[in-house]
Amino acid sequence: MLSSGTYPIGTPGQAWGDAERATWLARQVRRRSYVDEVASAIDRLRDRFDVAPYGQLDYPPEQFDVFAVRSRDWDHALPTVLVTGGVHGYETSGVHGALRFLDRHAQDYAGRVNLLVAPCVSPWAYERIHRWNPLALDPNRSFREDSPAAESAALLRLVAPLRDAVLVHVDLHETTDSDESEFRPALAARDGVPFEPGEIPDGFYVVGDSENPQTEFQQALIAAVAKVTHIAPADAKGEIIGSTVVAPGVINYPLKRLGLCAGITNAPYTTTTEVYPDSPRATPEQCNAAQAAAVCAAIDFALARTPR
Ligand SMILES: [Zn+2]
Picture: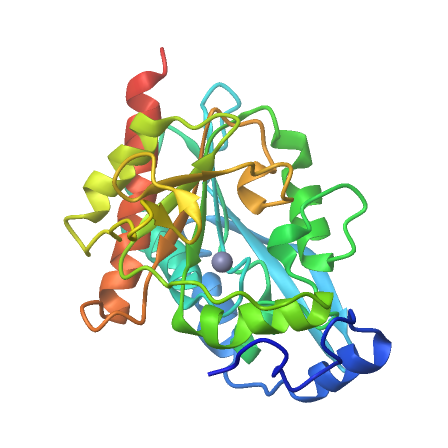
């Protein structure tokens, strides 16, 4: 366990500079293949969907194409659904849950919605099983104009023309034990602030927008996912990761102010899913199924509430 001031890079109380970021980068190891596990799976969707790269991330000597998958016969009269996965590359079920939704469920919505899915927004981090990009930036705090994170900037460009057309946006994430053992201590060290230990909730939860909470919508996702995997209980303070639980498994963040992916459109229905893959009670299969179930429930709820 790492505690305050013991992260191996940097000086306690001082934010990282270039040297510390370079030290951090040198420690990152490629552990899996984006091409073999993700890009090839996206490629196999080409016979059913329109697939195209929406950007290229240049991290010499490496280069990654990021892909958008769109429903065929795009119809401007239909509402648009946006699904994003792998904004945090290590959150595996976000990526494979988005692919599972496309493969097994997207067909159910043909002719009812336009689908735009970006299954893996941060491929370099997918390969390193990491949260940040190579600049030690968190793409999911970087969705703002002139973003310094190329992953966020590329997705913002993709979505910009549709910002007001999106009815539902589901951004697929995980909360993991490594958040507490590695990524939160690294964040505190990077920013030169003390690390304050927290609790990792055991189970699925969602994060709504405190500016537009849509609690019934969030609860519909929770009800659907509860059939697949267990929902995170509130802690002794009535919170999940430091935020008040407003309904079972539901917390809210100010999405746009924090530069979070779920805030990149003006969709009336928007959520961030948080699957817990490290639970002894959850398999990878269940985690992927939970993500897909959340997407389906989100679309079903929004369509039911939208006048045709
Ligand atoms: Zn995440």
